[in-house]
Amino acid sequence: MDQLVELTSKGCGCLLIIDEEYHLLGTFTDGDLWRTLKASGEAIFKLTVGEKCNRKPRSVSPDAMAMEAMQKMESPPSPVQFLPVIDDQNILIVVVTLHGLVSAGL
Picture (cartoon, one colour):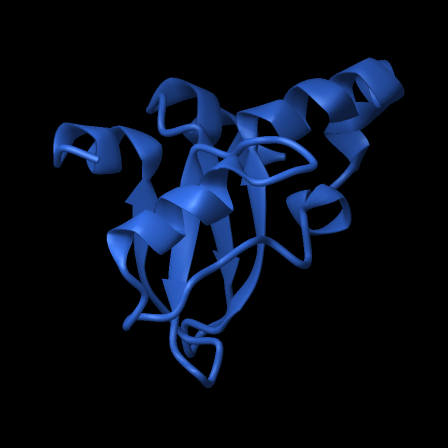
C-alpha cells in the first residue's frame, strides 16, 4: 500500500481512485485507513487501496450550489471532509473540502 505513504505524508486526508480517463472509481480516506488497520492489523500491507476503498462515494455535479455540497458532506450516516465533483460521465473535475466551504463563508 504505497498509497498509505501518500495519504499520511502529505496530510491530505483523502485519496481519489481514478482511471486513466479520470473516471472516479472510489475514495480512500484517513478514516478508511484507521478502520482497515483496526480490522486487518499487519495484514494491511498485503491489501490494495482498491480492495478497501469506498466504491460509491458521495459526490456532486458541477452545477451544484455550495450549500448543497455542504449538506451532502454533513448528511448521515457520518459526515465527510471531502466531496468529489463529477460530471454526468463520472469524470472527476475537482474535490470540494469542508474547510474550503467554511473558509468561503458557508
